[in-house]
Image (cartoon, rainbow, N blue to C red; front, side):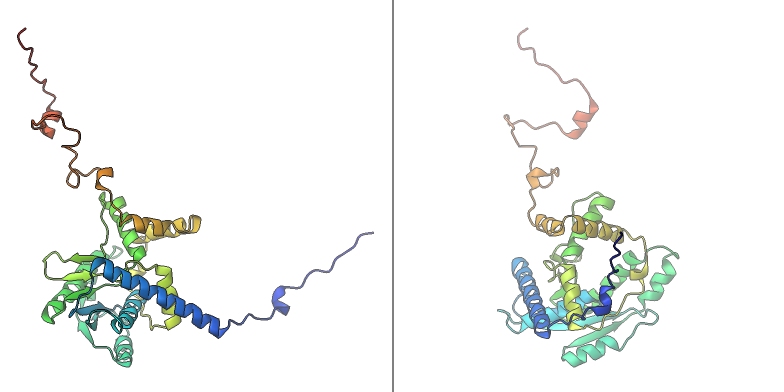
Amino acid sequence: MSIVLPLAEPASRHATPSVRDPRSTAREAGKLAKRLRHQVGKAIADFGMIEDGDRVMVCLSGGKDSYTMLDILLQLQKKAPVSFSIVAVNLDQKQPGFPEHVLPDYLRALGVEFHIIEQDTYSVVSRVIPEGKTMCSLCSRLRRGALYTWAADNGITRIALGHHRDDLVATFFLNLFFHAKLSGMPPKLLSDDGRHVVIRPLAYVREDDIAAYAEAKAFPIIPCNLCGSQENLQRKQVGLMMRQWERDSPGRIETIARALGDIRPSQLSDPKLFDFLSLGRHGAGALPDAHAWLAGEPRAVDHGDD
């Protein structure tokens, strides 16, 4: 005789919806905020990003990264060992459909000093770049020029950008894979013209933590519909690779990020960074240059008194 067991009903029919304890959620948000403050504070200290009397221009795009950067810097400003001022600056590039009121309304509610630069870079990029081609390179140059000009005219001593740890790692691989060089996105740099100090306070912060923080704070995110909507970008390819790595080997990106701060020139192959020529030399004579080695000419041999 066969026994037929009753089919189990779907769990969803009887399961009680899980309700998160608001106190637990608040504790998690508090721990995340503390971790971000610690990481940003450490980056500022490690690289000397902000000094007493600095006027810091926080470049605000309307994305999760720049919102988080502004929020954490405002928190640190209250207890920082040095005194510095903050001005939030947004570049309105005149993209169609851009909600111009969102950032001003948000910043006024915070009571933060801010300025909106209005410059129609969208039309320039759309006219110059052929349809289907990526706009990022030209767009970033125009955006950087507008921000640098405003900074020079308004007494800015530090320009803060919202690039995070994952951006720094991704840039390293972009340069490695597509430009054949070991270079990246430094946490602090001097602009090419020597007039501006650029800082990246989120250099130690994971993108996932920023996303969670932005969600908890309910920032009014403004999506980028210009370059952000384009597919097959090299950066997107690298991003996919990094996310796959993190799924397969959690912690790998953090390891790579730490490696970027522990460079061993003698273990690489750049004679401009390490003096390989003098390594292990016995005599004082000059070494033949590359042309002599490549020429293939037989060298003179001294046979003594033969």
